[in-house]
Every structure is written in structure tokens, then in C-alpha cells.
Length: 199
Ligand SMILES: Cc1cc2nc3c(=O)[nH]c(=O)nc-3n(C[C@H](O)[C@H](O)[C@H](O)COP(=O)(O)O)c2cc1C
Image (cartoon, rainbow, N blue to C red):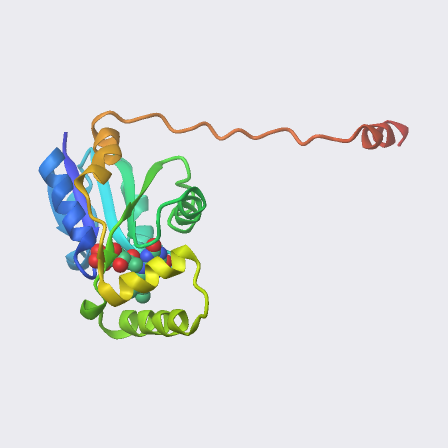
């Protein structure tokens, strides 16, 4: 099985996951920042796209979104690496924001926790994080999630763990079917039904 692992990483967490994944399942690693087209990976059986999430979006999403339509063959797995704990609502939002149009039932999505290396950020990324830090430090009371984020920015955080990759390894080796999207018939209230018949 030919596996292509495409990654984009700002401070190293996504790259680390990509390398760990390669060690587990084999395949070839590609730095998305150095790719101009996706023809190199056209013949792959599985394509894994691992990238950090910034402002809800996976890095290099624009490039993937533009070129994915040329990639019929490989099974597609998108892995977002973020700081936020990957709870249900976060996962649903991530999936919605990072799904190219028409691929709702063609991509498997996973969320991993990366970490924070504030001192390694540059440019706009640094500026945005600095702003978040400023706002968080001004707050009199921080929610547990905010407090965790605040501490992560100040002290750094690293949640990378090999075990987190297990569901992705399983999906690569033993693909599961896509959930059927059920379209429920709209329920018409009894009175409305009556109105329809009268008309
Ligand atoms: C400007 C900026 C925006 C971010 N936005 C999000 C976000 O929307 N959701 C999230 O979970 N993490 C967010 N993060 C945290 C990163 O996704 C996290 O640090 C990630 O582990 C970085 O991975 P990398 O080292 O591979 O780039 C953001 C970080 C920065 C610097």
C-alpha cells in the first residue's frame, strides 16, 4: 500500500506527528510548503494530510482545497493538530471548516493535540497569539479552558503522544465505511396536512 503523508507545521508539532506516523505505517513524507502540485502523490493509495490549525483552518488548506479535485484515487485522511482539547463540538466545527466542497463523505477527519511554543512563533502568528495572551491576562476570571491556554502560552505545552495516533493508524490499515448521511423526511404537523387536503 502506497501511503503519502503531507504535512505543514509552524512550530514542529505536526511534523513530529507526521514522522511518528511514518514510523508506524511507512510511506513517504512530503513538506506541503515545498509542493507546487499534488501530482507526485496521485498514485498513492492513501493520502494523509497533517497540519496545524490556525484560526480554525488547517495550514495550507487553500492549496489542498485547490488541488484535491485532481486526486481521485487515494483514500483521504485529514488530521488537524491544535491546542484546544478535541471535544465533540470542536471536532464538528473543525470538520466543517476544513472540508473541501463536495468531499463530506470522502474524507476521514481526525483531531490531535499538539502544543504551544510561543517563543518560536513569528510574524502574524506571533502577533495574534500575543493579542490572545494580552486578553487572557486582563481577564479577572478565566474558564478552565482559557486558563489552560494561558498557561500553555506562558510556560509552553507539549501534548504530543504516540498513542494519539492509534485511531489514524487503524483507519489507514483497516478503513471503516463512511457513515451514511440520513436525510429525514420533514415532519408535517397534522393541522398542516389537513390544510393541504382542504386546498
Ligand atoms: C495564530 C495561531 C492561531 C491558532 N489557532 C488555533 C485554533 O484555532 N485552534 C486550535 O486548536 N489551536 C490553534 N492554535 C494552536 C496551534 O494549532 C498549536 O500550537 C499547534 O500545535 C501548532 O502545531 P505546529 O507546531 O505543527 O504548527 C493556534 C496557534 C497560533 C499561533
